[in-house]
Amino acid sequence: MAYSAGLGETDPRYFDTAAPGGVMAHPLFPVCYEWPVSRPIRQIPPLAPVFPRLVHAEHDLVLHRPVRQGDRLTTTAHIASVESRKPGAFVVFRFATTDAQGEPVSTTDFGVLYRGVAVEGPDRGEPMKIPASDQPLRPAGSIEVAANAAHVYTECARIWNPIHTDIAHARAAGLPGIILHGTATLALSVSRLLEGIDPRRVRRVRCRFSGMVLMPSRLEVFAGPEGRDLLFETRKTGGEAVISRGRIGLDG
Image (cartoon, rainbow, N blue to C red; front, side, top):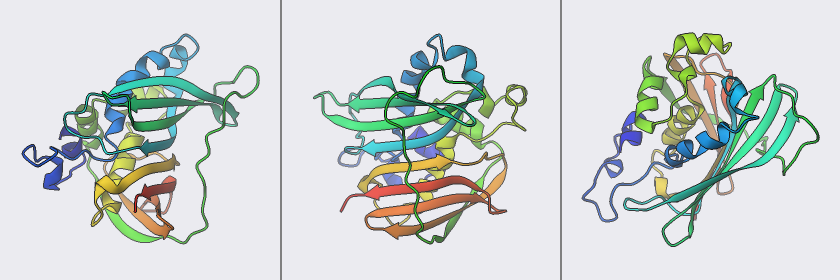
């Protein structure tokens, strides 16, 4: 409920604890239980010193089924791939979550870029690929990002990184100021696109983070269908993309 409230959701299904089956989870809610599991892996000796250089670059979430109130979940994490890219080292953390019966609930490939960091040796693992499309996109709505959006999201999602809340830390990391979390920008975009669509139909969300979102700001979402997928791109008012290659997979 806190996660949905932090996104400004008003759909009563996100808050109705008396409904059959309980509260509906936002499709991006898995980021809340994945973040604590990412901390130990981000603190392994080769990665801990370069944490300030970490930028969330790509995201690929598979929902095997919707998260349900009362679920008892277990999440494991490992490094799925390491790749040398021009801006730095690209590392994919894979989070696999199962329920009490051991059945899969969600799997996320969380691609991060360590800016200016070199990779020793060859690339390892299967490269993460976010497919592009030539499908034309049309305006699908706007998002008003409040000046305090990053602070609210930090507390409601329990996802803490000082580049989102501490301006001195953000500037020390080479940023112009605090920036909105990539997963917040993605979740807000998904919310806008699911107006009129049951969120429980979402089975996959993929995207590439292409730019920073400062606050306050206004974002524009563009979308178009491709089979069962809904393609989208989120842009600043000047036209610069902050999310590209967005793709929401829906069940039948």
